[in-house]
Each structure stands twice: as C-alpha cells, then as structure tokens.
Image (cartoon, rainbow, N blue to C red):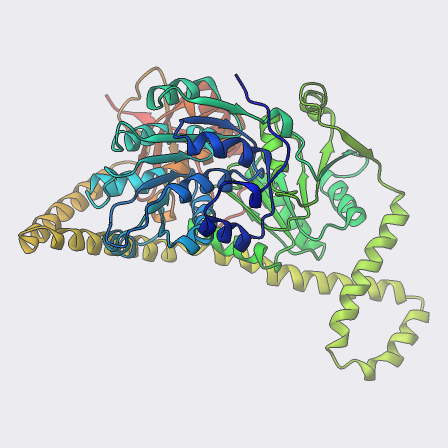
Length: 595
C-alpha cells in the first residue's frame, strides 16, 4: 500500500547524530521534503524500500541520511559498506558530491566510480579504501570482474533512477552487481516511475520491500509554473520560440527537443540571432558533455538545447526555465523534463509550445495528472520587436562602454538622419551577429573534435587500459609474468579486431530473433560507445524502445545493430532525409548479411 507523505518536518527535530546534523547544516537544508521524511524511519529500521518520487524532490538526501548514519567509520577498513548505483556519470558525480558533504563531519569516505575516466586513479582509491561507492553499473561491474572491488561487506545498496537504468539497458548489469553483495543486504530502490518489469525484477533482489509512492502528490512540483503557448502557424516554429523567449526573458534555460536534428537546427538559429546556445545530444563524448555542462553551470551559456537521452542526469542549480520545443510522446517524460527546474524549495517555470500534434500529451497531462497550464499568448509582433531592440541595445551598449567610440559619435548622429540610416544599422547588426555566430559556432566543432583527436583519445584509452592491467597484475604474485601474458593476449586481441574491421563494412553474420541488422557509420574511433549507438538509432528512428534493439557489435569505424524491422526502416529512412551538420555524416542503412 502506498504511504501518505507526512507533514513537513524540520531536520533539527529528526533523530540524527550530531555529525549528520552538521552535514545537513553544511548543505543549507532546514525542512525535510516528503520523500526525505517518509523514507528515513523505515530505512533506519533496516527495511527494503521501493520508493517512487519524481526528479528534483530530494531523493539523494532521502537515502543519504540513513546511509551516512549507518556507516561505521574505520580508517583501517578498505572494503565499502554501501553501494549507490546511478544510470549516468553526471548523476554519479552529483550524488557523490552531496554524500561527501553530508558525510564529511562524520569522516565517511565517498568514492565515485564511473566510465569515461582513467582506471589508474580509481584503482589507487579503491586500494586506499572507502566507505561508500557511487558509480555507474558498467564500470562497477568491470571492477568486480577484475577483482579490484569487493562488495562482501556492503550491507546497503541504493538504486537511484532505476527506471532510467532499465531504459538504458543496464538492468542485467545491476542484477549481476547485486549478486555480489551479501544476501542479508538492505536494498533501497528510488525511481520516478516503476514499470512492471522493474517491480518484478526488483522483487527477486529484495526482501519483502515496502512501497512508498508519493509521486502522485508531487507530479506538479511545488514552485513550478507550467505555461503553454499555442504555436502561431504564420511564423516558423523556431521564430515562435525566439519571440516567446524575448517575452519571458529567462535567465537560463534547457530547451528540450525530440530529435538531434532539431537540437542542431535550433542552436544554430539562436546563435544567428545573437543568443549563446549549444546543442547537447546523445552522440557527444563524455569529456565534451562535461565542457558544455561546465559552461552552463558557470552562466557562460544561456541556452542548452538537448534531447531527452542526452539530458539524463543533468542537475543545474538555479535553472530558471525549462522549455519544451515540442511536447514528448509520453507524459512521464514531460515530468522528468520540468523537474530540472524548481529544485527543492526554489521557483521555476516550464514553458511548452503546443501545436496540433501535441494535443494528446497536453490533454493527458491536464486530465490524468492534474497539471495546470497557464495559457499565454504572444503580444503583437511590433511590441516583441521593441523588446528585442531594447535587449540588443543594452547588450551593445555594454560592449560600447569597453570600447573607444568617441571619435565616431558625431558620424553616428549624422548617419541616423540619412536616408540609408536604417539600412546601415541593419548591415552593422547583421555583421555583429555573424561575428558572434562565427565565434560561438567554433565551440561545437571544438567539442566534437577532429578525427585525429578521436584516434588520439582511443590510443590514450588503450594506454590507460594497459597501464591499469599492469597495475592490477602487480598486486598479484608473479606480476611480471602476468604482465607478459596480458600483453600477449592484448596483441592477439588487436590483430583479431583488425581482421574483423578489415572485412567489408556492409557484411555481417545474420541476426537472430527475427530482427534485421543495421549498419551505422560510427565506431570507437568516433568516441562512440554501445550506449551511444543505441541512442543514435532510437533517436534517428523517432520510435521504439530498448526492447526493440538486440546485439550491438561496435567496431573501430562502424557498428552493427540488431533491431526490429519497423525501427530499422524508420532509422534508415530518417538518415537518408536528414541533413547532418557534421564533418562526417552518419550513415544508417540495412546491412548485407553473410550465411
């Protein structure tokens, strides 16, 4: 039975140790959110919990409080006492940071472990010892298989954003990891949604879990204003959005789109209009995602245009607005999106552009989930253009204050009175915006990196992997012999991979389970992982789920994906029609099979 959230509780009134109270004060928290007050007592009683609460409601502190309280601090202990699994690197880093601040007064050691980072430092940290591991399933499982991480003393496991881990294909890894923990472990599962597949699988890993479902009470997070604008069909949709932003004047915003093409098109359009915007899509390498997010968090970047897959795990403090360029097909996705603003006690605005194709989702959100939209209409175009002129004038005046323009003031006054004055100003504005666009357009190119950068990155990763293997071998007896064996195995593996990659790209073994095989012109040299290939195919198709995808064979220059016929044809057709704005266009087509 779902439990009812209690009244608001002060952290100072909760039975917390002085050290944890100090951690709470360091985070600046005073009142517990419903999920935090609902979970604490049952978690401290040692019960397994299945908690449903949406993004932005304070889930990290909800499981962090009992987790930190239950840790027995002992600097001589090296194996972790608790494990937190997260679907993305960004989320793992954010959770680790908050737990570290919460546990610092008590001396709890938190170690983040995630992919896309060098293995060597992680190995050293694991050898030095920690109390809590926060990481992504793939890298955690990798350490377990290499015997560099033991979980025999981990008495608590937390699965954060479990629905996302399922949708990203991590669930088999998650269950494999849990099998390495003691049978009497306590498991806390947190998720914004709880599909039947998660419930069934989780029940096999948990001991009579208690359900705490407060998601219905927090679908419209307190502090978020949901606003809708009907799209004016007389104007191109990007200009609709630009005019809305001129009126709303957000400090910063994530603009959610449904396709990568829309992300590339919108970010380019906004740069041409003098805005600072970058696209964030699922194909961006991890180090480049971090660069984009750093710019957004420091306020250097005003608009982040993102797909849902790329935005997983993003947490930006004081994000004033979330914008839906188009409503998603599923209502749960809308709730995930708007949860990026209005975080814990703060105000936020969620703006949605609504056209004919969005009516189904729009109606469901209102009728089934009680989302109340404030309908707004754009003022007359002339009024919007006055707002735009005031904004541009303020921006240019700020630049002018830092430039010596005295000698041109008299000429400027005369130009205003000439017949061509307006034309001249329009020309200068176009040139100014073009220069801005050129400067800012370099950023995505730099972020993507050249082909040679990708090769260098791959070589660095291989070197790090070999160095890591050597370090692991040195921990065992006969380390020198083991290193030699590893190098021989690596050399043979490289030769086998080269032989596979030299085979004709369009040929591959026949697929299984009635699926067809797609050829995708992206591989490890392009900094692509299997996860990114999955995202690329599903985003290109504009339909389907992880269940529609089968085996993925990642090569250096390309990949093969087994997928259902419907999704395969949709992805291939979209790739033919789509215009790639990259140095190396993506090719997605049906592969010719052997045998």
